[in-house]
Every structure is written in structure tokens, then in C-alpha cells.
Image 1 (cartoon, rainbow, N blue to C red):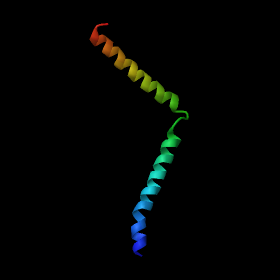
Image 2: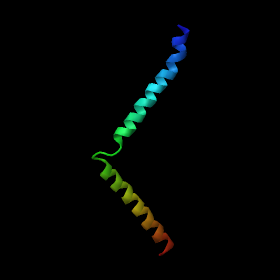
Image 3: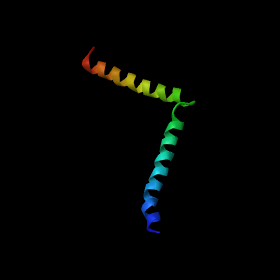
Image 4: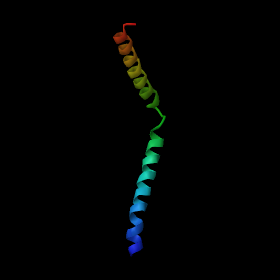
Amino acid sequence: MEYVSALLPPVVMAVFFTVLVVTIVKSQGGPNKAKEDAIVDAAFARAESREQAVRGD
């Protein structure tokens, strides 16, 4: 029974990691991708305009 207690933590971690990777891969793209890209682009545009305003360009 010691081998079960020795193997259980790595197996649990491997399963968790696999589920995590699958979840990340499935969440990429899809119908929300355009919305997420637009939000990031807007945030970059705001940051760039603030930087230019501070410089006085």
C-alpha cells in the first residue's frame, strides 16, 4: 500500500495540470476572442494617448 500513497500526489498533480491545460486551450479563440482583443486594444490606445499627453506631443 505504500506505493499507492507514493504515487497518489504525482497522479493528482498530473490530472490537475492536464485539466488546467485543456481549460486554457479551450478558452482560447471562440466567440469571445474578438471582444477580448477589442478590450486589450482599447486599453493600449488609452495608455498610449495618456503617454503622449504627458509628453506634450
